[in-house]
Length: 144
Image 1 (cartoon, helix red, strand yellow):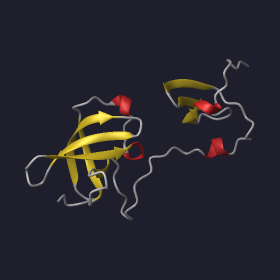
Image 2: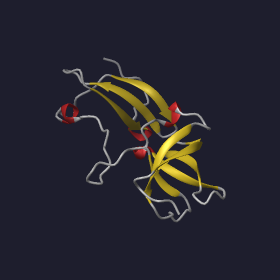
Image 3: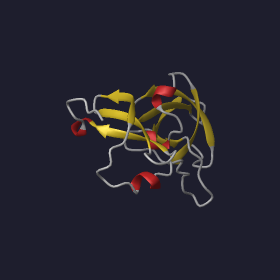
């Protein structure tokens, strides 16, 4: 078996999806390879930034096999308290806006379930990325 959460391994990207990355790792016994899954929240890169065959540095989050026989992996470093560094942006300025506030946004990418937007805070230099589900989108174009 693999040693665990503190060991960094080099794997090969075999598939990238909106849910995460599938990575092949050499087995410690040198017989074959194992497939692991990096959920998108554990990735430091977006799937569209990667190409199949890319080498990725990963660590094992759960040293045991998941029910689907894949290792659960992360590309994020653990903090000294065992928690994963969030890497999340500071959204406080956005959360303090009134709920009815309209924001300017640029569509960065669309999917079958919605769109990823780049937002700029109306009164500060803060930026954020957001996802709008297709069910919440207007059919017609909205203009100022």
